Length: 478
Ligand SMILES: Cc1cc2nc3c(=O)[nH]c(=O)nc-3n(C[C@H](O)[C@H](O)[C@H](O)COP(=O)(O)OP(=O)(O)OC[C@H]3O[C@@H](n4cnc5c(N)ncnc54)[C@H](O)[C@@H]3O)c2cc1C
Image (cartoon, rainbow, N blue to C red):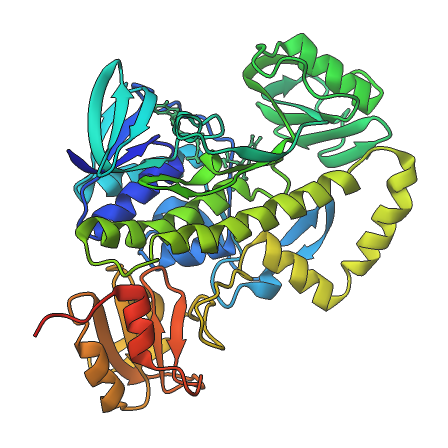
C-alpha cells in the first residue's frame, strides 16, 4: 500500500512529489513515458510562481530571472508592466517547461520520491480506506491518489469528476520551422481580419510559429499536423506567402476552457491541467498548476501523516478552484477581445487606453502574474503571501523566503511577544518560531508552509491558537 501515488510525471506532478517529500511523505510517481519528452509548451513563469519557488530555494535553478519593468500583454495588446506588482522579486522567469520538470524531478527523487517511468494508469476504483489503480494491466493500492496526468486525465475520468466549461471555437497550430523569408512576416503578435500569427523570430535557425484561426475549431484534435497545413494557415491569416521548411514539434490545440467541478473526491485529488485547461494567453496554465502543487503538498502530507485538522484537505479545493476559475475567466475575455472581426477593433482600442491607467495595469498584471491571489483564512488582513521581509535575527540577517525553505509553518515574532512564542511552541513539531526585527506593521505573523499569512497580530479579536489549530491541528502531546 503506497501512502500517496502521483499519476503523471509532468512539471506539476514532479513539483508535488518534491513538496510531499519535503514534508517527509515518500510518494510514488507513475509516468507513462519511458523517458521525458523534452517538449516545452510553456516557457514563462510568472511572479507568484517565482515567489513560491524562492520560498523553497529553487528559484535560481529553474531559469533566467528578470527583475523590474517587464512589458507584457493582455490579448496581444502590449501595455502591461509586470514589474509594477512584484514586491521586489523577479517580474518574470524564462524557464522552458522541460527544464523546470527535470529540476523538480531531481529534487523529488532527492527527497525520497520513487519515480517509475513507462507506467500507464488505465483505471481507478475508490474503496473505503484506499484506492486501487490499474497500472500496465496490474493493480496497485494507495491511500491517496493525485491526478497530475494532464488535460485528458484518466484519473479525473475514472473518478467520474465532470470537466465543465466552454468548448473550442478557435483552431491553433504551433511548430518550430525555418522561415525561408524570415523578415516577410512581422515578429511578435499580429492580428489580421482573419486571425492571429505569432512569430518568435530566429532568422538564423528555427522560429516558433503559432496561428489562431477563428473560422472553426479543429475537426479532429488528434490528427497529425503537416508542414503544409501550418503554412496554409499562416498564409491565410497573413494574407501573403510564408515559405517555411524543416518543421519540428508541430501540434494543434484549441481554446476550450474547462475545469474539474471538484478538485477532491474522497481519496482522489486533481492538480494542474488535469484540473483546468484553457488557451495559453498570458502563459498562465503551468503557473496555475505549480501553485496548485504548492497549496496541496503540505495539506496532503499532513492528511497522510494523520496530523491534519478536519477540513484541511478540503481547503485545497476551496482555495484553488476559485483561482482556476478566475484564470479561465480572464483567458476567455482575452480570446473574445482577440476576435479578428474588425467590429471588435474599437473595443480593443478602448481597452488599450484603459491599460494605460496605473490601477488597471496593476489589476491586470496582478491577475496574470497571480500575485493578487488571496485565500480566505478567516482572519482580516491575512490570506496573502507573506512579503519577503528582510529580517534581523540573533543569528544574523535573512529573508523570510529563506526561513520557509524547510516547508514548515512559521511564527514570526517581530516585537518580543513571549506570549505568542509560548503559544506557538505547543505546535513545535510542525511550526517553527523565528524572532527578529523587520519593517512591518504587525507584531507577529503566522505563515503557512506555502508562504501565505494565516494569522496576523494586527487582527484584533482573532486568536493565534485558533489559527494554529485550523491549519496545523491539535497541539503536541505534553
Ligand atoms: C502552446 C502552449 C503554450 C503554453 N505556454 C505556457 C506558458 O508560457 N506558461 C504557462 O504557465 N503555461 C503554458 N502552457 C500550459 C502548460 O504547458 C500546461 O499547463 C502544463 O503542461 C501543465 O502541466 P501538467 O504537469 O499539469 O500536465 P502535463 O505537462 O500534460 O503532464 C502530464 C504528465 O502526465 C503523464 N500522463 C498522462 N496520462 C497518464 C497516465 N494515464 N498514466 C501515467 N502518466 C500519464 C504525461 O505523460 C505527462 O508527462 C502552454 C500550453 C500550450 C499548449
